[in-house]
Structure formats: C-alpha cells, structure tokens
Length: 334
Ligand code: PEP
Ligand code: MN
Image 1 (cartoon, rainbow, N blue to C red):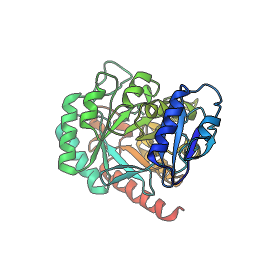
Image 2 (tube, helix red, strand yellow):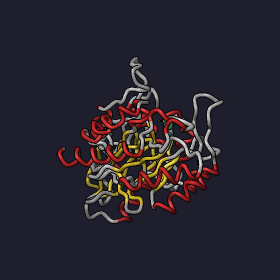
Image 3 (cartoon, rainbow, N blue to C red):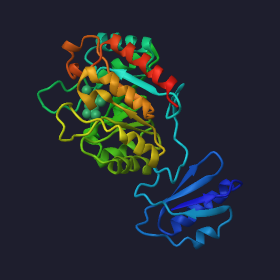
Image 4 (cartoon, protein in one colour):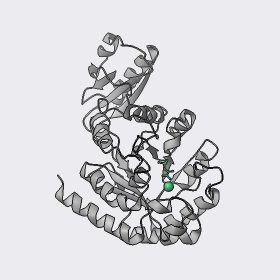
C-alpha cells in the first residue's frame, strides 16, 4: 500500500505516518516526489486496514499497490528515475553509453580501449576485474589489480567505471573503486549479494538472469531497494531460449514491459545478447529505437587476442559507427 501525503504535508507529518505504519508491524519507506511525498508500506502479507493511517494529518489517500514488487513499481513512483553520477544522467532523454572490454587484461589494454571509447563519446567504461566464467580453467580476471587499473582509466579519461562484484568476498572492494557496481546475470538471484548491494553507496547495474522473467528481475531489484539503495539500473542482456543462432535471445520487448511497470532505467547489452560482433550495431539500433536508456557494449582494440569474448567485441572503428547510428536513431525517433 502507498500512503500519499498532501502537497503541503510537513516532514513531521510524514514521520508520524511512518511511525504509525511501524506500530502496525510493517515498514514505511518515504518516496519523495516532485509534488508530494508518498510512503510505501512493505512487509505486509495481505491487505492493510487503512483507517488509522487515513485519519492522520497530512494524509491525502491510501492506494493499493497491485504488483508483488512495491518500491520499484511505477504505481509507487510514477515518474522515471534518473540516476545522476557527476554529469552523467541515466534514465533521462539521452541514452548513456557504457563501453569497454569484457575483462581488464592489462593497463595498456584498458587505457588503449578507454581512450578510443572516450574519443567516440562513451560516458562509462566497462571492464571486468572479477569474471564469472563458465569454465574454472578460463581467465578469471585480474581481481584487485584490475580495479587499480580501472581507477587509472577514470583518472586519465574522466570516464565513469562500471565493474562487476561476483560475490560477497569482493563487493566491498569493488564498491570502493567503481562508480557503478555490476551484478551479473548469474547472480541476479543471489539474494545475499543483492541485500549487500542494497547497502552499497554506489548505484547498482543489475543484469537480467539467463532464464529470468521480468517479474523475477524486478523482484531482485526490490531486494536491493528494500535495503535502502534506490539507485538501480536494470540491464536486458538476452535470455536463453530454444534459439541457438545467437548466444542468447535479446528480448527487445522487455524494454517496453519494464518501462510500463517500473520507474527504473533500463539499458541493453547487445554483446552478451548476441555473442556476435556483426549483430551488435543492428541490435543497439533496435534497443535505442524502443526507448532503452543506454547501451552496454564490449569493445576491444585487438579482439582476436582478447582473453574473453573477443568474437562479440567491436573494433574501435565499429564503436565509432555505433555511436553515429545511435545519434541518427535518436534524431529520427520520437
Ligand atoms: C559482463 O557484462 O561482463 C557479463 C559477464 O555479462 P552477463 O552477466 O550478462 O553474462
Ligand atoms: Mn563478456
């Protein structure tokens, strides 16, 4: 349930509503809006008797939230969330471009790619330090050494850094170095990691699980937000289907569905969705055309020698072309 306050309600009145909600045995989370504040009630298993709440000063109305997720729902927060990190705004009109290698392999590699993607207009540099790999024998990432390289990338280029925390043993250090902490597809339902991400001081990029529904993705986001971190960016990165022509199947309609039911920004990763470099630009065009808030794409200056995901990594010139095409789509779409 959502307790909507009157426009002129005071902070003290909001506090009293939260107190009353706690007296009823639930939690009340204030959601400040442009015109008025609402208080979202969580922790209830069924309908709530609202007469005591409606009787409090400053309360306008009580609305039932019909979705199983509350805080990430548009019912609770009708306007889109915009996440601002420095000058970069994620969730607004302009798509945000996150680009870089699958994994940080060396300082030279990361800086070379970072300068390329910066030159062509990326705002965020991606690069794995801790890599979740299917095989234990594959390159697992450089760990903390990679995080120090990423720090250098930010310093030299001004790009923001997004990198993945793969478990509770590394989220703390990732949080120190990253501007955005990534939770990967394989960990979308790692609930203890999600709860920990809910206490992080940085925004979270939450990728859709390999076989997760939209509701499951949003429930995972709810785990993070219910712990206090409202800065969440969702990422559609393809799901597993019977189709085996591509690595995964990009669920393009997921962007529309998520925008309909949630206020959170949603970006698309066409690299892991397709697994094929030559599909990345057309899929990015499609994503932007349906209203994605950004693209997360793998770029490598020497894909044949990349330590992971070379075949889906764009060459820098292709990334330049991608940026041009995104601009063109933005100019023609409405
Ligand atoms: C990644 O983006 O580095 C990654 C491993 O992707 P996913 O979690 O979507 O497989
Ligand atoms: Mn990859």
